[in-house]
Image (cartoon, rainbow, N blue to C red; front, top):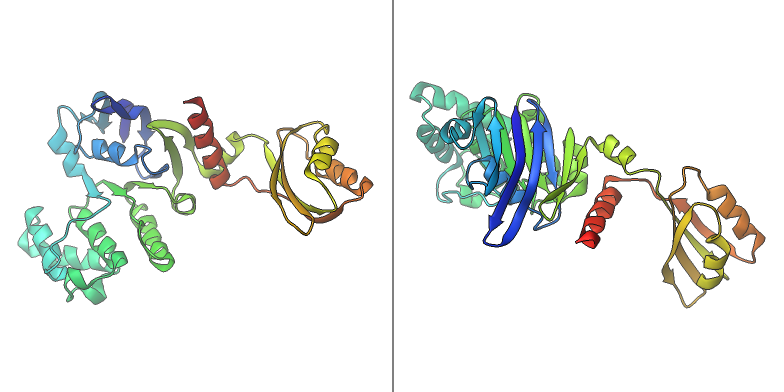
Length: 316
């Protein structure tokens, strides 16, 4: 459906997007995940034809964006991070105006607007002015706008930014519903959002792709690194480090906190394929330490994201 090859974008001497390559099949919900300034918005704007790339190619179906820009734009619905609205217009009047400029015949407009109002949960506010609406309802109006021409591809830039938890859940449901029929690409820096909504996640940092795959595959690709956290009483960090660091597979021991009442919290990082918790527990039991807390962190999308972005930041 969408083929991106070695896509690069410079702003003067600053490289915002650095050689991104992607293939996105029809019907996939793809999350473009990364911290602020990673290059997500620039990438989406190039996909929509808003920005020309400095180099590289974008092709949708059999059309490349350099030679068939108008054709590609007709396939795409786009919701930018900050949606521009005519705040004084009623929701219905605004969507009717969008339908007119999108070339929808007069006898089809009402049916299309009714369908989108039901899909996006706007039926109860069609008589209200856009300026009266909450941020979440504004986003729904933006989604209806982007969907007006029934595009094959929907591109959303930070669609849940600034929304409260209930609004985020509602927008997520709408995106999943749309994704049953459309190819959806959306950017976010909210890790749980990507994990809950997407079929596939691409993590981008400093303009480069640092991971690409389904959530479970990303977790498996992250390897067997385990982080074990524990809280002890009657123990010093030096003694804990000297006792536990020699255990095979323990790569590092980090002090998290040490309180005035003698409690010590540490994190052990193990890269071994063997679970070392039993051996660690036996070593603690042999010492004059009181074990207050002991658990292994689950390998979540958040820890993968943090590790990947931290690694590339160190390399640069």
